[in-house]
Length: 156
Image (cartoon, rainbow, N blue to C red):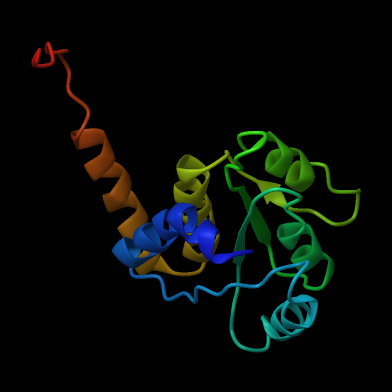
């Protein structure tokens, strides 16, 4: 993620990955404030065994695109909701990558972080039957939590 404040969003990705038993690392790597850290992180990611990167950033949100420009690993970008433009600035910055530097862009905020984790897990599950089974189970639990009949919420 680009800053400590992004953790409020990106922790949801971490929670899903933990539930699925996917090892991960959570790091603060700012495209603007720590460019050497970003360079080192992206250039060493594959060699350190990473297979997918989920990059969350707000505002100008250059982290996902810059990471994607320095690695051939799949990069999924999560636009973090900003105060000024409610995350639209982040979304536009991530989704409008030039041809040849792909970033899979997700929804703004918590939903994007959750789906980023699920999408990364789905990619990894292509070669991991245990993870594939965990994803099937996760989705089944999600389905089981959906009521068939609506109920009135308590007034109060």
